[in-house]
Length: 300
Image (tube, rainbow, N blue to C red; front, top):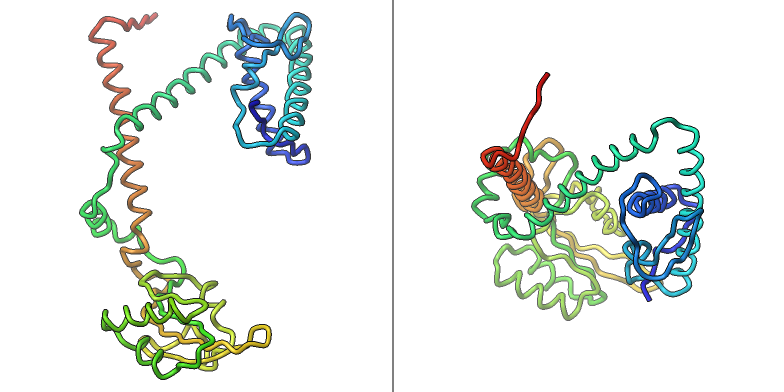
C-alpha cells in the first residue's frame, strides 16, 4: 500500500502544500476546465458527477509513512478535494467566464511544468558536463576574489581531549608541523582521546566556544598562533586534559582560503553550466522550429 504524507493540520505551510496538491488533482481530473483525463483504479470519492480516483491520489504518495499516517492523510486529502469541488461549483456559477480564465492559467502552468521537467531531463542526460575540475575551481577563485571575503571569523586549529595525563608527549606532538609527528599524534588520539580535531578545516566561533571550558590562558579566540595550550576541565566528576593549538585565523573582511570556498565555487560553476545548457537548448529548439516553418506570427 502506498503511503501518504503525515497530517499536521496546525501547520499553515503544510496546509498550503496539501491545498496545492488538491488543486493540481482538480485541474487534472477536470473539476476546473475540461482536461478530458480519465482516472484509473477505484473511485474513492464523488461530487455531483465528478470522481476522485485512487491513481490521482497515489501520484503524490511517497513510501515513507506507516499505515496510520497514510489513512489520516488520505481522509484529509479527500475532505480537501470535496471542499475544492464545492467551492469550484459555486465559483463557476457566480463568476462570469471563470472557466476560460482558469483554462488559460492551467495551460500556462502546464507549460511551466513541462519546461521544468525537460530541464531536469537535460541535466540528467548531461551530468558529465557539470563536473567541475580543480583547475576550474582555482581559476574561478583567483578571477573573483571579491566574492570570497569573510563575513565572520574562521579558525583553524588542532585540539585533543583525553583522560590520559600524558601532557609532555601530547604538547610536543601538537606543537609540531612535521607531517610524521602529526600522523603520530593522530594515531595516539585515535587510541586515547575522547575527542580530537587534527585536520586543516576551518570552523566558526560556536565551535571554539565548546572548547573554552577550563581554558586559563585568556580568550581562546585570541590564542597565539602556533602555541600549544594545555588545560583541563571537569565533566561529571572526571578530569579531562585538553590540548589546543591555533593554526590560523581568518578575520572579518579578509580573503577566505580556497578550502572554505570550494563547495560554493563548485555549486556556482555547476549551476552556471546547467543554466547555459537549458537556455541554449531552448534557443536552438526555437530556431529549429522556425527553420522547419512551424512558427507563424500574425500581426495586425
